Image 1 (cartoon, rainbow, N blue to C red):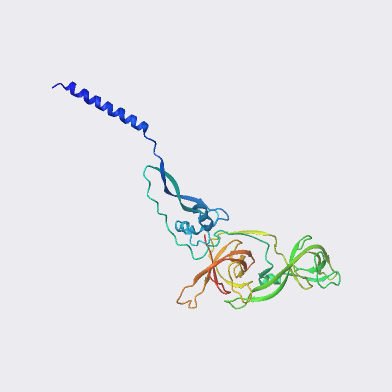
Image 2 (tube, helix red, strand yellow):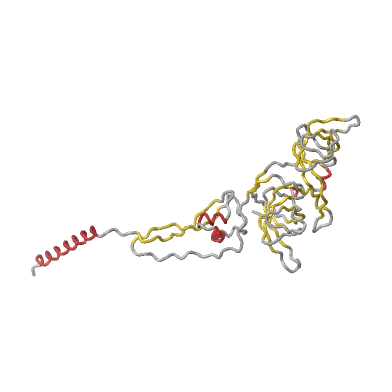
Length: 347
């Protein structure tokens, strides 16, 4: 058999097929993109001041009601109402990948039931001028000064008016010192203990020390100028050092486990505490409280021996005195009451 004659036609046929294939590939149009599939990735996100889970849901998914998708990935966040600047959160994101050829099957998104209520800001920043109402301890009241007279016969003392005042012997008064003028409203008794929790005061204005005189009997009398007033000031009103300049409150975690009680609120007598109201707790500087600390509010069970309490909201500390603190209710799932328990959110 002549193998050379048999192979030559076969080789020619293979060459012809190769040429046809090349020509066909050059004439076939390129494939067009027919869809996009989503490639799921888990990324780290560093919480910035002012961030909330609500806002992050809008940023990453275009819908603030998807905030549980982020919370689910971060079990180290026990309460969705509080995240803190600097925290690293895991976030699931979907990046588009173009597909050529056949139409891809649609990607089924994860479904989450919307929350029953909007989440409050999970980080907190609060601009304020110190509230006109405060709660101070008995020791602070005993150390306060007093307006004893004025330079003419006016009954009500307006701004730029000069008055005389005295301070405790231990007070180190310097010219230029500024004191807050206040008036006592009532004594507040502790709802869970015997005895007073403090004194509710109304801040009326500020006075600047302009002169000092030592009388023949050794008594020191100071002259002050009223530089600010929000209400009528009269002889007998009290004086105390208190910073009333605008402040910006930011969340500040604590490593102290503190438990206390809501002892008073500024809500009307016929109203209960709700989001946005101011209240006072029986924890202060001596307990380790700092401005910006957050607390969870718990309702005590009527049968404390048999049943646990339950959480009803969150508060943040706006101002700290020695034994008490002024707080803002930032989230309330139900109305709060004087006597409800507060527990520090520990880092």
